Length: 221
Image 1 (cartoon, helix red, strand yellow):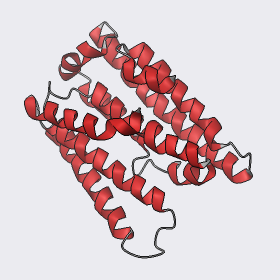
Image 2: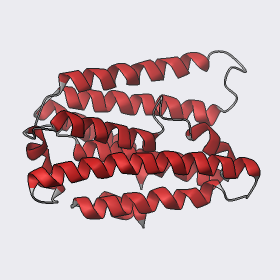
Image 3: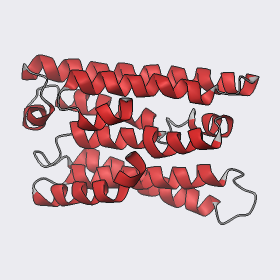
Image 4: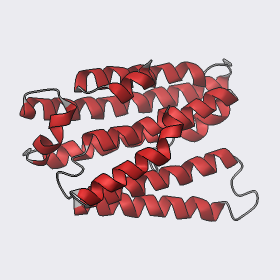
């Protein structure tokens, strides 16, 4: 329900509620077997999730107070002109980066994946994490404002993450969890896509968003 509502939400209140629902529902998947390791992973995940929710809620309150509405479709141009734009963008990037398990905010990810059952682990990597990318594409003023500084930062971090973990995969035994390795590489690509989108305005950004949705949609639904 949280995943479906997240994708279909067009107002900030609904988006946040469904996002929070999905975040806290994932806790049950992580602590499923009730072991001490699973409970520890659940505590770390819950702590990071609450921090991410706080960042996101702060960003939504800042945008809403300046825009005077909760319509996500109208927030792009309004965020581009907001006096606290840089703070809002930083909060959005941080809040959703935690959900994506993006380096260096990924500390919950290597703990949670081994503890969750295989189907639940697939949900974590295919739905929960990709919700962070959906949030970036939904809230950042992509197409309305070129953000070369933020875009370059995201692009550099993303490509660095992708090549770093790809390099780790070249050494047998250097990374025990192959699924986690692939997940980190995927997160690096997500960073890079978001960085490219943020660096451009107009048609180029929209084309990048369309490509991202087509490539990542099978993992969201």
